[in-house]
Amino acid sequence: MAIAGICILFSSCCKAQITYKDTSNTAPQSIDLGKVLIVYYSKSGKTKEVAEIIQKCTNGTLYRIETQKKYLKVSIMIALDAKKELESDNLPELSTAAPDVSAYDLIIVGSPTWRYTVATPVLSFLAQCNFGGKRVAAYATNTGNVGTFFDLFQQRAQNAILLTGEEFHNKLSGKAELNKKIKNWLNKITILKFEE
Image (cartoon, rainbow, N blue to C red; front, side):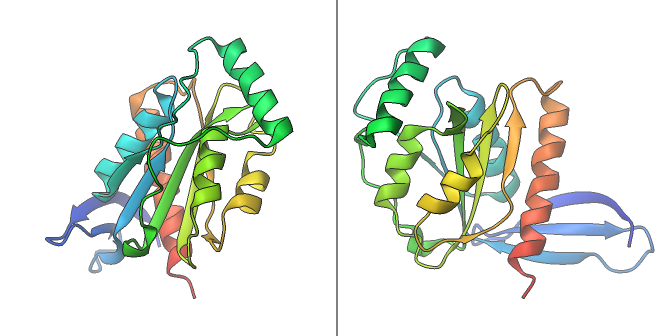
């Protein structure tokens, strides 16, 4: 089946649907994404940008992870802090409790890549959150290499049914390329979500 395009539609109860336009002139096929929660931590703004695009595509709810500790904006200082926190497993305290994920059908978690893995504020979130059998997908933003990001995320995501993750390099050539990559990824995880 050739897919000519993807349209994001929103139903009245804040559930998103993706409609596939088939070039064979048959009726469009819709898949209900259900209620979507997008959890993210962002220092430079890139992870936030991806979260906001996902929110627009899914009509999901955004939750920004905030820490009590304020990290400096200098990359080398973040890397040094992250190294200490990862080696000691002394993760930063969060400013607020993790949201109740039980009301959502799909949880998407976004994190910058720090020291080739999940940022420590996101690890703090994962330590507080029991996904209770919910479907979870992670995305990483980075300037180079995600390293052990997805392996560590899988280890720390408690009781999650993990879907395909994605990385978004900070040097994607523009907004259109980023939007396209996000929509392609949402398409992939949507298909996996309902393939049982």
